[in-house]
Amino acid sequence: MPKARDIGFEGSVLSIFDFLTTEHGFALIGSDEYSAHYASDCVWLVISHGRQSYELSLDVARSANQEDIEHPYSMQALMRVTDPPLAQKYRAFTATDAGAVTMGLQRLAKCLMTYGKPALRCDEDFFASMARERRAAAEDCARKSRWKADSEVALEAMKQKDWRRVIEIYEPRGDALKASEQKRLDIARRHVEQ
Image 1 (cartoon, rainbow, N blue to C red):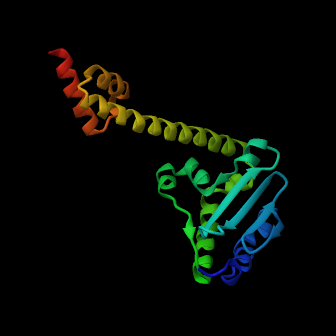
Image 2 (cartoon, one colour):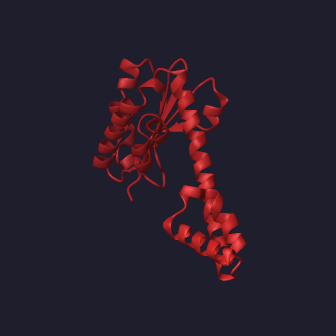
Image 3 (cartoon, rainbow, N blue to C red):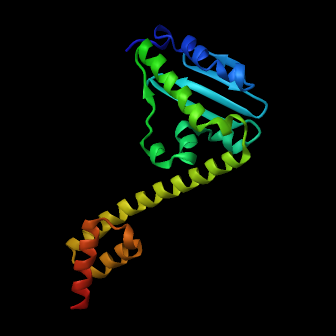
């Protein structure tokens, strides 16, 4: 893989994201071959090119908000507020040559202007929505992780013919059960009713 300095990230990012300084009141704080840092009166923004992943990413935060600073919002977070289904599909662009860097940065800039304008204006309602969406996504991820672990326990309970345990695990999920899990729950209920 080529080195970052050989594929022109710094020059491309400064050119493509120049609109931040000319149209949105941001100042360029610093840049190097892997990142460019911008700040306005209340928002900072970092566009970066992963040293090992080669992924192009964008992080944004309110400069006076410690939570934002410790956990800045990604492009996916910006998208999640206005287009949740698209946000779920979003993947960072991987750029390993100069052409891909330019194309990926143009895509990132377009996404920023489509989904992130309120963040650039430091819109408190938008940041509050991103915070709510982040919490909901974290809770969903934790729930899915618990469900995966519970499903393994339920499968083991099925093998042991511990029908009550199978019911205890699957019943609280209700309509969220997969078809195969619903079938196991139905089998367990039949065995308990006998």
